[in-house]
Image (cartoon, rainbow, N blue to C red; front, side, top):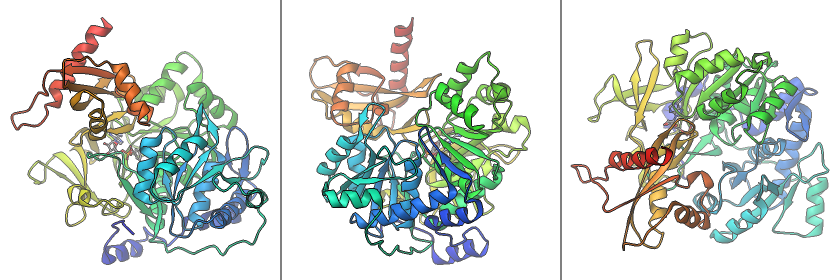
Amino acid sequence: MGQVFWPNSVAAEYECRGYWRRQLLGDLPKKWAARHGDRVAVVDDHRSLTYAELAAITERTAARLLRSGLRDGDNLVLQLPNSCEFVALLLGCMRAGIAPVMALPQYREHELVHLVRTTDAAAIAVAGQDRGCDYEQLAHRVAEMSDRRCRVLVAGEPGLPASVSLRPALERRPTAAREEADGTGTPPDLPSPLPDDLALLLLSGGTTSGAPKLIGRTHNDYEYNFRRMAELCGFDERTVYLAVLPAGHNFTLGCPGVLGALSAGGKVVLVSSPAPEAAFAAIDRHAVTATALVPSLAQRWLDSVAGTRSDAFGLALVQVGGARCPESVVTGLQGAFGCTVQQVFGMAEGLLNCTRLDDPARIVRGTQGRPISPGDEIRVVDAEGRPAERGELLTRGPYTPRGYFRGGTHNSRSFTADGWYRTGDIVRRHPSGNLVVEGRTKDLINRNGEKISAAEVEDLACLIPGVRAAVAVPVPDPATGERLGLGVVLRHGNGLDLDQVRTFLTGKGVARFKLPEYLHVLPEIPLTPLGKPDKKKVRDFLLADRSVETV
Ligand code: OOB
């Protein structure tokens, strides 16, 4: 299967302690519908679905997926904008025993081919066109570039207001397409996976080497993840949750996110653009009570509400996480929206820390909270692995799997032999028992909460003709937290400019957010006394260039 889960004795304990409830995620919509049938479950710019409709669509989507040739145990790369179709396909996959691989809408060929190959995906599901990108064409190119037969499914045909259609784009047989559209044809038997089977695959934001790693999450562990977060966030039937960050990211999906809000009987509003205007219109129109933001987006919202009566919105809770949040953003949000703020320090690998809704203001401002579960084990260790007040955070627990999906040798670097995940985050224990994130050992750039592996960009940059060596570094930035800076050494004296680098990488199908924003040509890569690239020095060169540019 490729995913390292928990030893049996540990799994039995998690079940015994009530963390795991043997609940299959694909069966949830039926349960929810039995309780809240006629109430609205999900809304986007075009349509809304009641709980009863969501349950019916989940069943139908599962059946359609299986009829289109997919099987229980397959993986499917899911790349849809925030929409009702996203939710229906997600749940439909889980109902059919197919693990959705949660791709972000920003991904292009480079990232998608990697996902399809690593997961052996049997299909890629996309929206036809969205925000200037022809996803259907993109998916076809990806399918052609991957080694095995990968179907392309296009979701969301217009004109079917209360349904989610799935067009198998590769097989354009008219009868099959009609069956898909009207839901006829013999319904296949829907499988019944086991609760400790793989339910979905999340993308790691946190690893150092090469392309992003995947984390397989089980029905048992992920259900606990969003149930526990929903409990801590006080979600209930009155909750109206706005998904404004990509719904496929763990934060928006399950912390408590879309799944937590639905489990609590609330309503989920999905917008496909994070722009303040669109988000504010949705908040106003649907009386949104809770949402999750990365700090840079929170700052954008604050800039755009300056001076207006935004506290008239009924926003009760704003979660901020994904990157270090300046205190000014926390106080700004409290002041502008009159809401409770919660800091969330989480990771796709599992562990979630958050401040509690009734924590004193200084804790909410100055810490990233504490683990959400009594089952979470954490250690803070120094470079020699000894317990310390400040150092790398290690963790194990009921929703932190013990390895990456098909992680190979990478697993032994990121996980200890006894199953602790090395987060690569440098934290300090606050006297209150909360954690403060102070840095990281992992080599990445955290731009708007989106993680970019330095090694991945360096490998790509070395493919540029004339580039002998490259180092990618984070350059601090007030708007995005960090930006991607690239230092390069050239083979010959020929010049290279930023536009050429960006054009080259775009041609390689690299997602736009991974394109370098600063470039510095170096005679040699500066080295530390240990002979490793001195990334601090490279960052200083880039910072110096930047100060010259902005003068
Ligand atoms: C979230 O998940 P990922 O997987 O995209 O990234 C995880 C990494 C963490 O290891 C840490 O380096 C950083 O992102 N991070 C933060 C942070 N929250 C995440 N660094 C400083 N302060 C924070 N509050 O980013 C994620 C997953 C679930 C909920 C929230 C965020």
